[in-house]
Amino acid sequence: MLKPSTRLPATTAPVPRALKRGPSTTLISNKAKRDDFCPRNLKKMHMTMDKLMAHSHLKYKGTLSMLDCNIFPGLGRDYLETEVNLFLLPQLENEGEDALTRGGPGSTPVFPAPWLPGHPSFSSLATKLRSQVLAMSRCQLSHTILTEKNWFHYAARIWDGVKKSSALSEYSRLLS
Image (cartoon, rainbow, N blue to C red):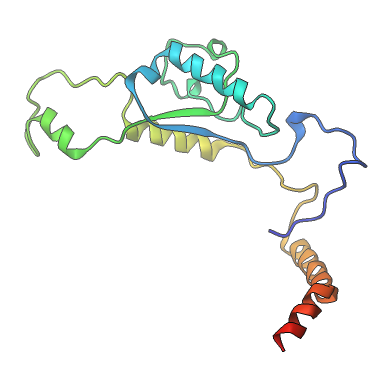
């Protein structure tokens, strides 16, 4: 992607971590087991991921939360001191397994009580994950607003630089 040049790090003052530009990192654990949805294990996962990512310059906190989705209704926002952007997805249910619990395709359930997996279904969690990802704010990748006109200007400058480079003239000489 063509974007405006940024100032050299030596000429700029240090920017606080929270103000850095760049994408938010989201960690998705698929095929999560029933035990992974236990609040104690969830807390351990968040603490471990926070320790692993502590020295990283990636934005890995504060934009996505399983607690905001009401998956764990009894837990407050303060339960996880170090909440990273981690989302758990269980294994996708197979139609064959569902048919066994229902008594076959198209029939009524064998038992009146539904099967309780210990976590919400894959489809409901995927819907909640999708809504949270789409609700994230977009960060600017550069210090200026990149319009089509600005993009064309930067593309023309880069193409002029490529045309004037010795590498292009050497390459065209080798092709002839």
